[in-house]
Image (tube, rainbow, N blue to C red; front, side, top):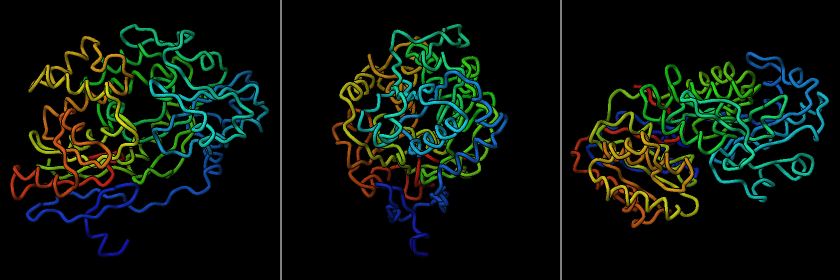
Length: 433
């Protein structure tokens, strides 16, 4: 990147910087770029170093000595961590410790997300792993899930039987900003990762809008505390977590006790991705990067909302792989028709009574609906996308712009000299006010 380019604002688009000229009169108060990148090049070495010197736990090879059955829980494809290479390194350590492939079951911790196809499994983990180890897509609706803990309400949490029966449970996940849990990683690989639909839904509905829940928050966060407590009671023994930088690349690996290692990793992540914002802006321009799949693309709205004044404007530049499902779009349309200008109250009514906004939809779709509709109650929302048609954006309740210049024109009623924040990579930024 040239010196001239470094002085110009940009957003991440198709994995590359898209430079633009802000409108005359804009006061850009904060430009949160992607920073310099020094990604880990030898993933396997980084994993082995972390599991041999873990945080708050004996080394992994010591932990699995004498274990009869081992379950390795692996995050799905909604994050860009090199999970295939991490899994191979973990399996190599297990083999060197005397654990045979027949003793190990690898469970893809999908929560309520879709299962990985055979082609995706092969591309991610390789035929060598798939031929030697049993690799299972978790099904949150499976009838054989086993009781392994409770929510604060007393509701039973059921988990995958291969995980329940394992003598040692190892989680492979990623640490990154999360709009409710504070950060991803840690105990989330077990709950909701390999848990039942009903308990996941009850947990999300109960805790999402409670005080203390939010992006980057763990102290006094009931959502995070519940996840941590369920994972602990269900016996998650060890985690191997990727810490991802603002380019969504592997910055480092942390391993060890699911609570202590996660806390250590969250502080490293916080130092890496935090950005100071001096005030709440009239306009915040953000991107869906690195999220491109389904309901994940609206996650970047949460950090933008933290730094935008009430009644201000959020411009979301979004990439979207595939087509957003018809029932998802129709749920937006029905909700707007039913609640009009009282969207937040409608969301609270649904969540407090445990009613799905998208009937029959996965929890992640319902959470995306709830969070987006709640923010639409507070902000003017403009969607810029080459992948989502204008008619779809209209049904969702967004103003639609075909490009940034049109979005800037749509935001102009907020004033000729607005205070503006720019988030080049909205999904991997942690605002600090």
